[in-house]
Length: 153
Image (cartoon, rainbow, N blue to C red):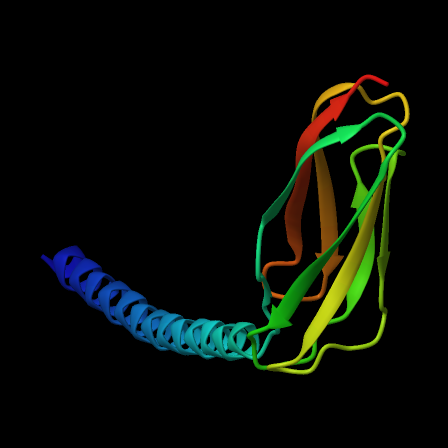
């Protein structure tokens, strides 16, 4: 019986010790959850304060042209976000298509233009050229298309 008392004191001590540890662990988990929630809220606010690129048209169909003709078109974009947008790079899917753009910041509500020139020399048949725009906007990678048909000379 003496051992029983000794073991029960040890058992009660262990229960007390572990329950105190669990209480501390619960406090740490609640603090961690609060920190994670605050971080997520901060990221949401930062995302809400990004610029956003929107094009007036996503594709331009130039119809039919004779081989050798140069097709020029201007894509107009607007920053519909809450922060300035800076276009860092504009590329075309083919060397026959040359884009030109401004590196100046596009303020919220502001507009900019991307001028595209397509050289149809050697490009007979249906054409679809993709122009890819990279920027710091929330939709950082966007595309527009230039399409049509080139008729042989």
